[in-house]
Image 1 (cartoon, rainbow, N blue to C red):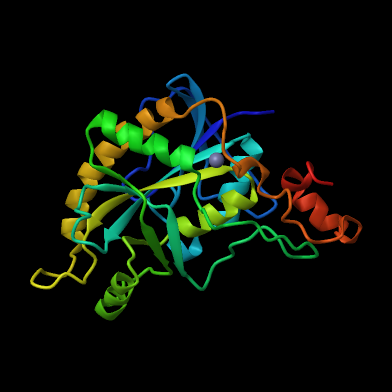
Image 2: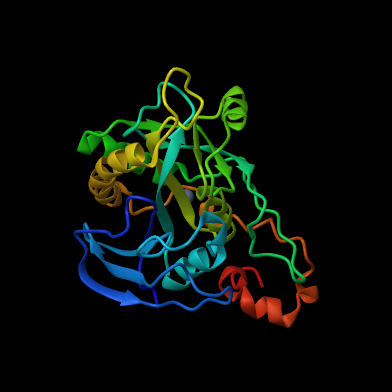
Length: 286
Ligand SMILES: [Zn+2]
């Protein structure tokens, strides 16, 4: 049964989704373990949505500890076809100021301690990832920023680090030399797994600070970040709601067919257990 059409993953600064009606909570168990928290299901702007607090309510889970696979698989189980993700990031460019929202269209992977695929255990699949986010979902975020009056910027490269520590100055400068725009700890695995699950995904990265590269300014303190996060969080609530409203009902992207040519394994060679575990992803193709 399809319980939600749109998934919302709230990060640092967005722990709940105000304005939901017909609300109920649902604990979802997945073949990959437990998601970060119970899902809050409800209606927003006339659409069925499922909200998940990425770090759990109360912010209890480190980026490295996040069960990204369970979070995304649970979305699939709920019937979600598009995910709007929100996260807090540091800026790697002068022009991206604290309280700006950036919709990255590229990622650089600097993580090393995370499970980033549903495949393995007898099945091999390689999804295309040249365009790692869904342009339609991203455009809805941009439209929503414009509607609400928040500075929103489409495009840019997100460096995903392992954390939980922020980067060193040498690292921050290295990422700047690569031309990256923002730095965060959570979005890349979500984008990879959503692609494997054939779910549209885009993220809105809310700038909280300038990381530590900016000379002549103090290094980032937690206090400064928290103050900006309060404003970002108020803006995020409005923008996400407007993005849900702006999301076209018809799909014109290829996200929903990501696995069409990706599975290399001879169908007969896929072990029964793996087949069962990944049934929601594989049923179209077996
Ligand atoms: Zn899409």
